[in-house]
Length: 280
Image 1 (cartoon, rainbow, N blue to C red):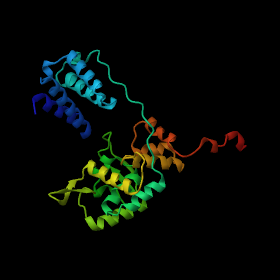
Image 2 (image 1 turned 90 degrees about the vertical axis):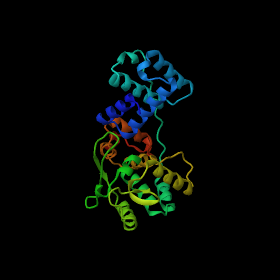
Image 3 (image 1 turned 180 degrees about the vertical axis):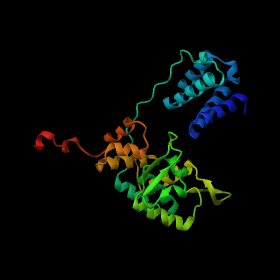
């Protein structure tokens, strides 16, 4: 690891960037250095511009281009104190967000019913019934479960804030069945070390693979991922008439507009809504 890489790593940690973002920025810097086989100190505006144009030519996604741009901005503005390098290089536009694909309640039940492994079943159940991100599932500890209040305490969220969300009675039962067999100490879902279950974090990739296998076993052909469980949780709450402000709070969204997308994914029809004029 060279000096600039080390400084970037330290800067991102001090600023409280999420681990996933730290990894992405670090990878972007290394890719930039490998492309020119030079230190960023020896490169300037033209090289940055040409590098980003190269990424466009090889059809990198807009979200990836934004990560590279942001990483290089941090390097030149905050690490090397050369903000002029990024002058007149525009930030890439965000892709228009597609509506999330939602699993029906019946499909959720199918996935859970074909998942016989109690640990895997517990992971899927808690993600759907509490609206968790995959990163939040791997960070869950035994102490985060408040069985008396039927609440989950979520730490190390995407935005870096702690929050509380609901815990289903059905999920609590599933978790107790799982706990009786696996007896985790710290992390609720332990990973393996030397082929033995140990008090180490499960990886997000493992959880995503578990869900993919369960989806196939359930005969679901929709283009859904583990994160679709969270989307489905929010959509089903809105379909059940839960106030969208409460949904926002349960999901931990900083902005209401992020939650509003779920108004477009419900199965409710506008034709079923009565005008207030017809009610008096």
